[in-house]
Image (cartoon, rainbow, N blue to C red):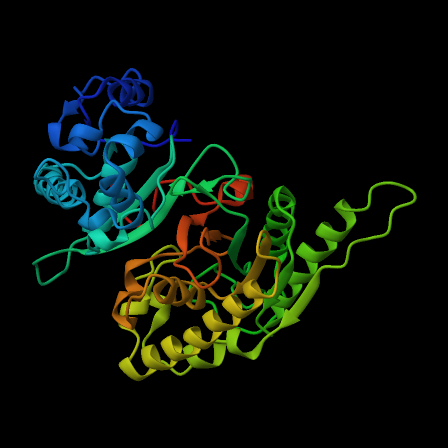
Length: 404
């Protein structure tokens, strides 16, 4: 996944599995890999070395707290998740003072969660809600401010793995078959230069058509229950492509009856008219930089946020209509809408919208191991590998931003 990407320096956990992973990625580069003990996996003290059934038997109440309320879990006089967050902040202090533009960090599931969360300002309550899988790649952009001070930080990608993000799997160690998949609609004919934000209500151009077909093929890894789209033309076209492929794939034999996939166009997913109200010169923002969301006028941010809240409730209602064991809802719309809905999923406020980024044609997966009334677990953000040559490289930006 990273073979064509360039890095100035590599930081690694001192644990063997992490160091070996770093060596494989680093390959023949001459620079020495820097090990940092703060990048080691979470310390669980007396729990370490025990099988789960042994942990339950020996530390019943503590084990239950580790499962149900990890941020406040304590053992041997320690709070492991709180200590992990403190270590992550210490790591960023060391990484960000290093004179490098592009930094590779190789560590472990829990500490990578803490690195992502602390970078964008999320606390220990988000442990297990920003998934990190084996070999998962996450990308954070740090953009210096002209006036100095702390940089703007954007989570550009979360948990991109060599395997499909929509196949069967678990979230935070729990199996789940209930999920919402956010599909950012492909480029339309209005988007001559492929710029985001794109808000023209026009049919998809050739690139958008390819993106929709590639997305439909990826979603064959899951049985879609309902497709909900905005009423904007590019979203409707993407929805039709996905439903057509889903129905055809379910009926390859001569005697079978095609499966019907319900497709709905919902007004609450429309945000084009809201975005068009801005007086900001949005053309100055490059295609792959979500900083424009921070530049929107406050009243437009509020309107976008309120609309996305209604859209998110609509998706949760659709999810609750399926069986308790299995339901997959696909939602198609503008990236700005999906960024805002992620904010609602994570119980954030409108000020956080500029902390996330989505490309046209991307997929974001949210699992619900506790059902639609439980908290959503973000499996991946801004996945585009399925687009092949029409996707954006994992780390490389058209801007000369710093990537981590």
